Length: 243
Picture (cartoon, rainbow, N blue to C red):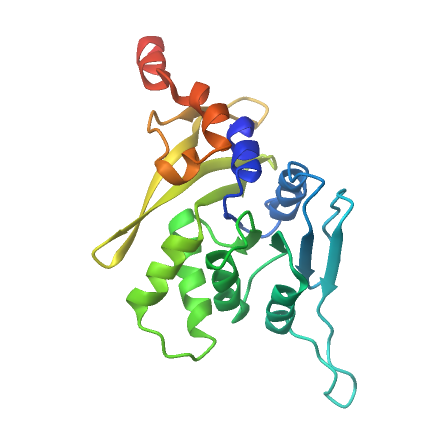
């Protein structure tokens, strides 16, 4: 599963990391950012400096609260818009939580492949619904279908992370967005975490399993294809034999 995530980052796919408070979204974002090639120019946008990227060419932007007179505030949306003028190869948004979601989708759809961001949500489907709600906060009066189409074309995969009952943090699903069917955004799980039991010490026991579904063309783009192929060949048959 880690190999798949690394291939997604190296293959310049747009990833949305979803999870609850304290689930480890920013930590996972830091880990995945380590797979970004050192030659790329990265612009990070955050409310508070939490990302620790090790690449050599990074531009760090942070929001600013208004002063005592209520002036001088720098909002997330302003930073996202200005980052597009900085010639970034990738844009990394620490967390999307408001109207800046629209500009983030615009960036992902206009040549800034490989962008990463996080969002608070309990499932991959909820994460997409929250992005749709945030776009509506920009008051642009865009039809719902147009917003969903833009989400489906901008975001390639959703990585769902959770903090389990024993306090451990795990990636519980990697879901690919495959497009739209009628009015709905279609998704398919590639990897999932299957919870089996809770042992006598209170630890959650389970296994990571491939669903057997081979990712569709966006995740198989070069240079991702050669590295992804061994992950899925005969994977479904292998698990059927084990069971």
